[in-house]
Image (cartoon, rainbow, N blue to C red; front, side, top):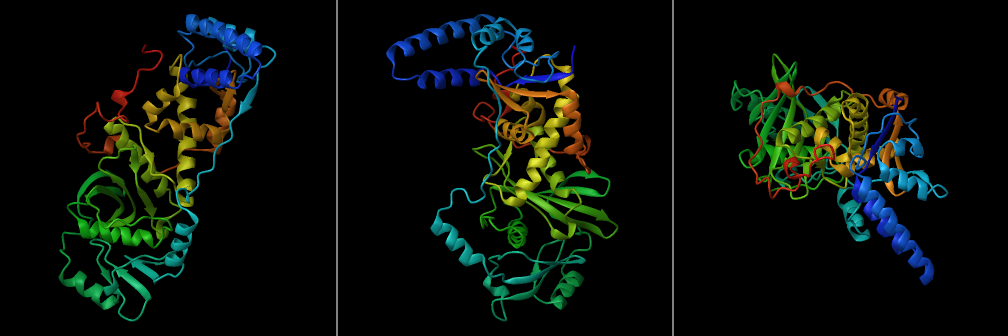
Length: 420
């Protein structure tokens, strides 16, 4: 048995390819009839022998998707396809599509956005022991602007996220108003591992805290839509823990129920704590919650430039790690099987495979083609970095939803080929 890895993309792609071939036939009636009859014979051959080749994992290949010997080991259907397409076999690598953060915005909307946000109204943000230069405009309440349209330093209490324009006001609040036992975000602590802690804050119960968190996030995010109605959202605040309390380093938000399967709406690591792996940690945490919910999930799109820089490395490293360490346990594997284990949505898996350059298109069928050595090289290039989420430290119960009506629930998905 060789060390090649060949993973199919499922029978639906083959059906779509057959339809596209039949529609591409020329106007010659005779040629069209011949093509239709040939496709009929091909379809019968695939139907008769396709019990084990729906999305098969074919060991014994050299990693080249055009190897007809590997195809023949997966059933009679692959033999039929190989025989009929000996002269026209085409192996191509699909090019990854570039995500556009301006998608859905016309020229007028872009111009209005630039006019509103081209001038910063806060020069610096002080949060805890850190002072950070802000990047973008944020629509803070007009009561904050006492001396014109610019705040030199916006002081924020890191435990309550209350805003102050003078340092003396912040110190007076912390001395008199801030409870001594309230040195953490509101809400429930659902994760603790080492010096990292995660709090779940309900936007309905803590409106002011969550709105202020959105105001702060807008100072560092260009295309963030600011929702004053935070009731439908849950906010997950990541904190570093020491003897002084819980210090927020970043957060992400998600809708309590998303019609389009989003498991993350907005994500931010504060500039003072970037380059520590916290962005990847927040992304991994969102997928751990999706696993608890038994759903597949995806970030809200279109993503910003910073969002793409964080998500694409996570997708690629997670999928390469899965293929390298889990593929030997399965005789066959489909993209849906990868989605069930990682909770990454199928379209994001396909995008990551395109980025890695290992998604091939052979005879109308999509395959993941990679030798084990190539996967090991990709694992070195796209490693799973620290800090990692320990699922055993997560204490959380998902919101109850109707599984039958939730199309993103794994329980509503069709079983894989091996289960059939």
